[in-house]
Length: 68
Image 1 (cartoon, rainbow, N blue to C red):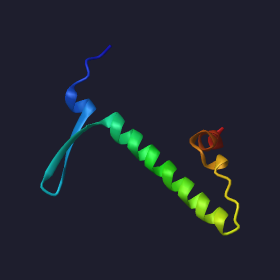
Image 2 (spheres, one colour):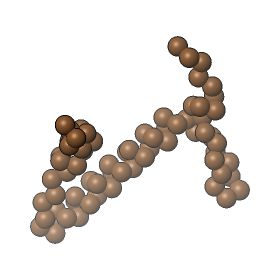
Image 3 (cartoon, rainbow, N blue to C red):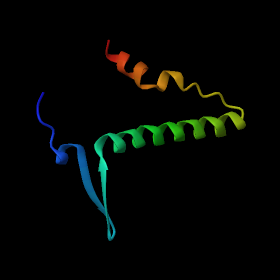
Image 4 (tube, rainbow, N blue to C red):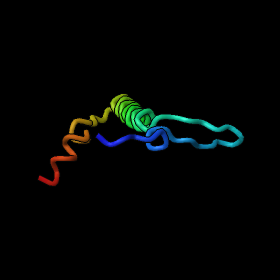
């Protein structure tokens, strides 16, 4: 197994005067979770206004099968 360097796993970034360090896996997990939260919020608001939004066809597995 190849050696994994810290700079490949941990990224440093600045936000204003603050510097943050985070694992790439943490950043990706947050992005996925954050998007899922918004999908749920949108579905709830639409449902409250009488619309039905089926999110199942929008999941990553359904999207992956579009090419097959």
